[in-house]
Image (cartoon, rainbow, N blue to C red; front, side):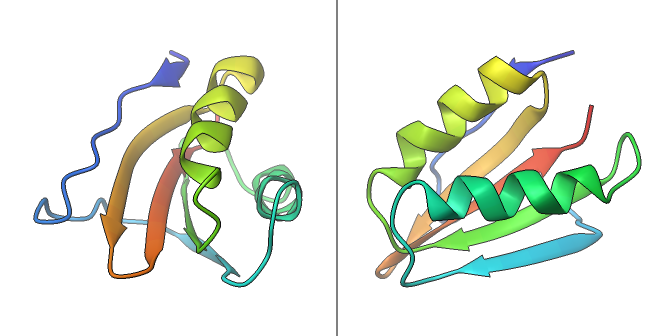
Length: 89
């Protein structure tokens, strides 16, 4: 399974995750590069939580999921940041 299965509902419950990357303050392409590096260290099926402040990261992570085959489980937008949940393929 690959692609995007995400929502931007800030009130939705966050998925469980095993690893986290804090990419706050970083701009494109650094949040994606940090996520890619973390995913390479993970086992298939594990979930990575990435926190970003770059507004373009929402679209960037959607494209990243489509291109890599990892699943974008959810995206949650809140006060000044966005949280992305990726499941390792």
